[in-house]
Image (cartoon, rainbow over all chains, first blue to last red; front, side, top):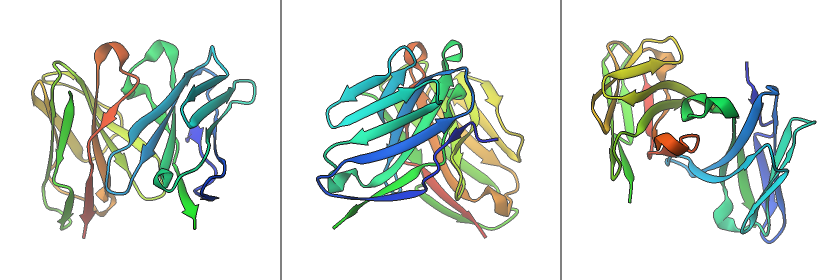
Length: 115
Length: 113
C-alpha cells in the first residue's frame, strides 16, 4: 500500500522555466515531508523539507508547498537548470515517530531538461 | 565531515549464490543505519534499520538479513539470492537527534541472473 504517491513517473522541462513536482499522501498523520534528489548510480541526497506547521518553505531555487487539507505537496524549481535533471523522491513521516525508519517514500519522478 | 561508503557499486550474481554488501560511515559516532532497496518502478523501501551494535530491526520479510558488527559498519547479506532480489540497494545513516533526514551512500546495483 503506497502511502506516498508521485503520479508522474517522468517530466520534461525547458531550461530557465519553472518545474513543478507533485506528491500526494494518504496518511493524515504525516506531518513532516522531505524531497530527495537522486542522480543515476548515486544515492539520494536530501534537498528540502517542510513541517506541517508551515505551508511553504524556500531554499534558493527550491520551494516546497504543503496543502494539508488536500494531502498534497509540491516542489517548485525556479529557474530549472540542466544540472537539476535527476529523479526526485518525495518522503513523509509522522511527527511523533521521528526516524528514517519511519520515512515513507514515493516512487520518484524523473525530471529531464528539454534542450 | 561525515561520509558514507558503500560497496560494491555493481554486482551480478547467479540465483542461489550468497550476498554480502558492506557499508561504513566515517566522521560520526553511534549513527542510526539503514538499508533501503529500490526495485524497478517502485519507491525506496526500507529493509532494515539499526540503532546500535547488534540491534537490527527488519521492516519487510524476505530472504535477506543485516548485521552491525561495529558501530559504523552495516552489512546486508543473503544465503541464497532470488531473482526478485535484483534492485538498487542503498545504505543510509542519520544522526539520532535529527534522524528524519537520512544521508545515503552511492548504492549497489544488484542483478541476479
